[in-house]
Length: 376
Ligand code: GLY
Image (cartoon, rainbow, N blue to C red; front, side):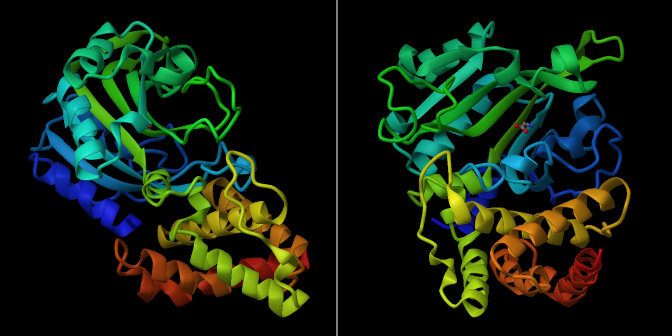
């Protein structure tokens, strides 16, 4: 099942459950000084979480997101990205844990028909309510419900001690088990292990606190739901791939880069398909990183960010520079990233039909910046 279908199915599922389908917000957050780029679906709804009435109490989105914390990991693991799409359903003082958990389970196991035996869950260490819903209402065996702490099962991670201020709460995550053949191979392995056997696909946040300036957690006027599921990870699971970069969201771009290498090196740099998790060796990691960075750069420019020496523009410039360095390592020393924009437009034209009209302008902005980077 491809990503366009998954996105549509997700939004349709929640629309049928009376959620308002809200457009993805820009990568440039409108009213959120706590972040430089939109990192999650919930950011455009912070005021609703704080109690503001926008006229709807349920929403669902496919939010374009950009996170730079993992920039150096991109391409080295199978599921880290800078740019990604987050599927999310939200409740502003309407439904809470029981419905959020039941619908997430129904979507995965009935709508997408993922085998229940493949799924594990985690809950916040003190959250008996969520634990019992998974155990008693959904019927998950206790050995497949893991209790984790502030780093893993509070969102934002470690917000209690480190911030940021604003809406936050305990969360419950759903993991897909790629099986004992993937990862550490230890007999005892569960979602708390970072070996890559278990990949988190959906995070259900029970947003019930406002973290204040003094670090205290004040109960919000309402109990809310904020969920986030990475479309790229879901696509990989649904396509039987152990690596997000092996899905149709990235492969046409990667093929184009390989062709570019072939033209220059004559042999396509002898790249074999690598589906190992979580490590990706050698050149494949560079192809993955370039494909990732292309998406981040194109959608940043789409949202009006110009590569520059400060703020968001600096981050975009840094990502272009990283791509240029990878391309150079692959033997491509001429401006090339700009030539890949058309492939990305092909992949993303369904959710972003206007991207086509912007294609030439975006490619031109990248070309100008890359020329500058190559000179200096
Ligand atoms: N807001 C939920 C998440 O980003 O995982």
